[in-house]
Length: 249
Image (cartoon, rainbow, N blue to C red; front, side):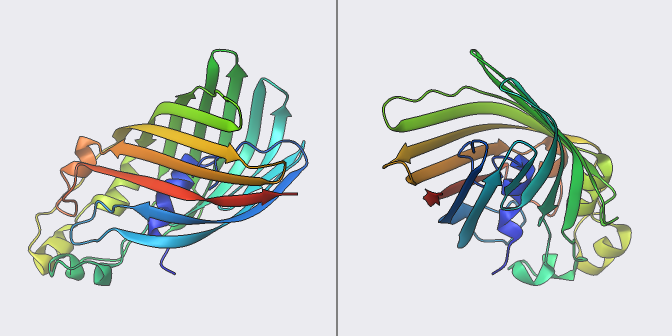
């Protein structure tokens, strides 16, 4: 399975896998389908199966592509060391555009950093700051969001708004075009700077009984000008829809 389409899950971190909030000692397994458009020129929207594996206790959590260790964990505040696989990459052969086929490949990486969330009656603030640990992009990512949770009957809804910051190195690695690539492909050379992308998201969860849940998560991301201006990109947005079922033990 090609997993470039999973990158949005990783960027969301605690919501980039299965966004159902795990309670201490909770373990769940499930399956989902992932649909997301790719901003790269010549890429097509595809559907992929995604396994759901989640575990959380007072000290540790694992959420499919994300793992972390709590430094502070109470009902209101959660601060953790976090690491997650960011399978964002560009494979020239996946594009239908002949010019894109002549560009260099961009590889995925392992990100690590700090994650913090504050929970209150008025909602939740979620933040993550992480950096590339494998020297693929040598870049950094930051994410900050506000979410509000409400739960009528067996339903749980969590709408949110947020913004993702990408450092110059990260944006350049995945969306820049070097002079050599420009000469080979015919695309204009391009060197972007830091980028800032706003997004909206919504998670809905339906609890059939004590163990079985169905969920759907959607996120719409408005690409930054730094990304939209890249000759590698032909869209002004990207996003994700993840839907499936899980069983909690």
